[in-house]
Image 1: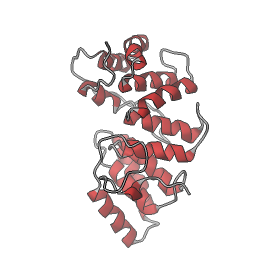
Image 2: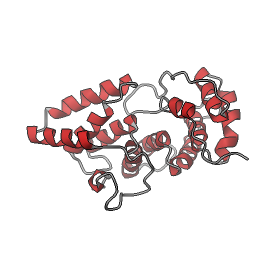
Image 3: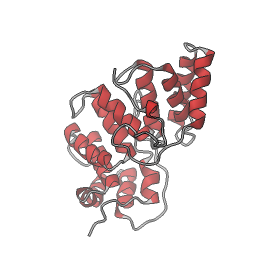
Length: 236
């Protein structure tokens, strides 16, 4: 029987390089090598990395159909990009949603972008921001970048320069993802020119004390939970 939520180290390492980011010309970065493994999902991710999309689909589909969130994410990515399957944003959104429902942060980020662009789903900036937050709250640097943009521009959340600066700062710690690192630093530095010293100090203090929850949140955090409720995106 297929295990419902397999989460191998190899799969996790690879998936973090299969993310989309607003304003970047391409959505799949060069992938990190991973060690040999008997995990079919990690093998499927490796096949995708090599461009063997049919093998990736064959390996991951049975696991995706049985609820493995990493496999669901990869099948969604294949439909979004048209790799190994007929391109379909609707199908991509369906698989991303299944993975996001199980807290798969890459799927949450990518599904958020689909809501922001109205691709395969009804456009909703509020839903996009919520999905970015769920992934950002787990420490996903690309989702942190997208959430920072949402706060800076007031799209799906109430405009807030302090929150934007904070999330840009956190995103800029993505040393293993130089594109996100550089882009977040530039956006943060540009935003700082429009902020007061007090606002910058507040944002830097909040970034310094922030910690990822490392778990999925289906809605605003209850009182007493680790992350401050004020970090949840509030729609205007």
